[in-house]
Length: 191
Image (cartoon, rainbow, N blue to C red; front, top):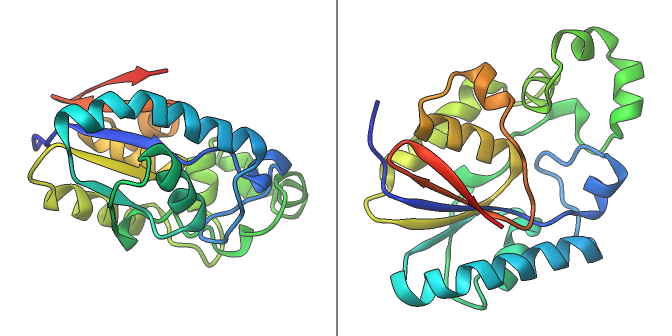
């Protein structure tokens, strides 16, 4: 297992579609009022880290992560990296979970976690490609870094760093308004 530089990982704040329990994948949805509060809380947590460490910052190209980064990183420059986009959830994107469960009962019965379900979506990216691009990003890091991205990408990234298998990754939390600190194959959470 590789050793990676320290990472401060931020999931975007709650979006309007999160609140509706609608699958975003790589579609766009703005931060909700609660999501703006999440990003502001992350800004408070990150301010002393950004001042003391001055780490490079990398952000998903999707609008919700960009919006979160503008707030949480307090206007600091960042690099947008396409490898940090959320998993492409194929035919599930844009649909409410309650409707998908009715339309795809077999997929929902076999895949009980969001990571497994979204990776099983017809026409989607799938777990192997999603894992490969996340790993590819991690392997390019050479210094402690900030990453602003997404819940499922965060689960895979945290799992890779902590040496977890897919089923363990799928059970990880997906907190918003917090910062996951990943260092020496372990995670701690700043709240």
